Image (cartoon, rainbow, N blue to C red):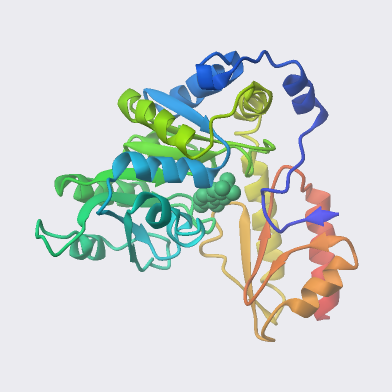
Length: 335
Ligand SMILES: *Cc1c(COP(=O)(O)O)cnc(C)c1O
């Protein structure tokens, strides 16, 4: 199978499984798991934060971050298309009594500064308390410009808000820009990073932030049922991917660029090349939806995420050859 539906579909390699099998473990709820501790130290170090906490998923690390930053009756400013708003089941509102203030995203994935400013509420008993700005990078595969991040987070800080980054794929951004990831994370009070997307771990995310924030995060994680015991087994995979799979994300971006460029030559397809920054190719078709293409590809062992738009995501388990096979199959379909 050539599975381009998402970069979450990667399978652990034998080397990763070996590291997991041999991982020293303890009871992480007691704070005794050496592999979890090692992963947390590594993640904190790489992101330039004081501390980190390992959790089951990015949904959980984002929720923990929101619970740490906001109290009941507070609100967070967030993009209309952001994962933390649209794709996390309304967790902040359901479990934290935290009101989301969604704001339209611009085509480049940013939230316009004037819209952030307009959404920050004055101190007035009618309003929820604006407490946090939440940005996402990459967002839909797009990289937020550093000067934008600087300006947006500064604006939020000037109005007394904290800043959280949903950095599920922040390493895709840093690798593509050729910069240390700290150059992105430095603007934020907390950052959530997925180990199980393009980095290729089977499970897990890390939340990085100040010692104080991470201390509080431990309480919320336990309350959410996220206190895992001998979690070193999965943390070991996290260490493995942070040590081995960051730089190679560039290969996924190169594959996505080739895929996008070739598919753009097909007259029936509209490929967003301008914002094809990293590992995701988005297609629209003059023929409407993609169910026929998706069905055709599936018969040849190629899976894509096809709705009104189609999304093809490159990752660790997609080789250059797979990309060429996919291009040929899609050309054949539209011939
Ligand atoms: C995948 C993802 C998450 C977290 O997802 P989980 O599946 O819960 O790990 C958060 N934000 C973004 C932008 C994501 O793509």
